[in-house]
Amino acid sequence: MRRGLIFLLILSLQFAAPTSAFDGKRKGFVIGVGLGFTPFARWSATYMGSHFHDDNAGLVEDLIIGYGLDERNLLTLEANLTAHGSEHFDRRVAQGFAGLSWYHYYGVQGRSFFSVAGMGLYRLVTIMFGDIYICINCPDTSPPFDNATGIGYLLGGGYEFARHIQVALYLAGGKPSERGQHYGSTHVAITLTAIAF
Image (cartoon, rainbow, N blue to C red; front, side, top):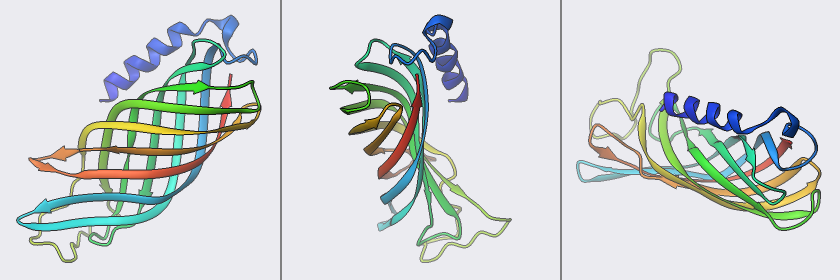
């Protein structure tokens, strides 16, 4: 996956001519970072006849790099990731989308609604603190998912209320799997994003 993302990053940089980078127009190279909150992040699975799930809130980060095709359309590589606690594990859970996204702006810079749609990968991992692993209410002592990956999507929209600053609502999800176990994963993210173009 890393090699693919690096290839796409290099490819997007090839499209960005030096004269089109950071000239105040959406056409050309764009890069952005956003921070926010996820009021709802869920993963679920059925294991040995028992259903497990976590529904939690957490922090979210959104990273964007890509190319503006014109003043209304951006094609980007995007990572929309969240981390939160778990009801079942003594580890934090990180889940999120990474892939290609298309942004469409409906108005002029600084006062425009926009929509976004993306396809890529959705990952679900656990982050362990130290070497301790405890599974609460699990059917056995096997470790939780540590790198479940599958096809993912990103949908959303928002409003650019100032030049280079926008607020967005995203819905991301997918069906990651690992070692034959399939998970349903979804998160809703609200972000404040700064985009340089």
